[in-house]
Image (cartoon, rainbow over all chains, first blue to last red; front, side):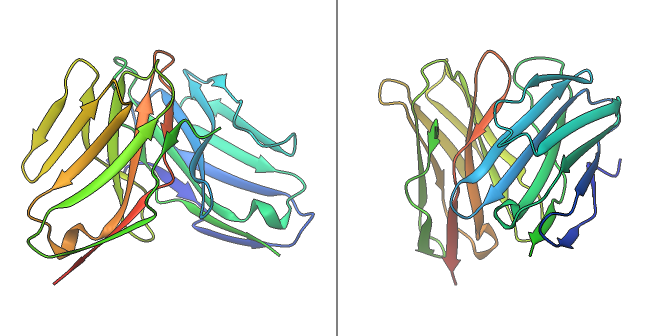
Length: 115
Length: 111
């Protein structure tokens, strides 16, 4: 298995532009998590899905952020419009929801820079 | 609202000595705790975990200790090796199965 796949690995954009980050889950996993890593706050949970349904989006910073799971194996995180303070590394992680104690498998992350 | 806190942003130890990384949490509903390790340009990878029914879990050179009354856990690495140099994240999970991470501690093991 290739593991969790994220694209792009790096994104540089200008303030005000729309940014879409993509994530492919590990086959057989049905829970998906989006995180943001910054120097100041470490790893923050933004949103997570179980069986394609958003369970907790309380970590989504503003309405400019939205996440979807159009199918069981794929998710997008969209920022529109983007701002310089959105610059961070964004990770997605997946897990097999076979119980409560599940290791999350992380993708390599997308480094976003908003100028 | 930082429910999981790692108060030491960095730690430096000599090869062969013990590394102790600390983590505190505030939510008493957390009942499962994990440590993840992260190398540059990679995603975090799972290292070791502990359930709240235990106070210690050991896996080779890595041991996690849990003190529920103090809402504190620690990761011990002994002996430390240069390859252990990475950022270590503490994480906690509760009934709703989401995961809250600390800000991370950067460990440097000097040869």
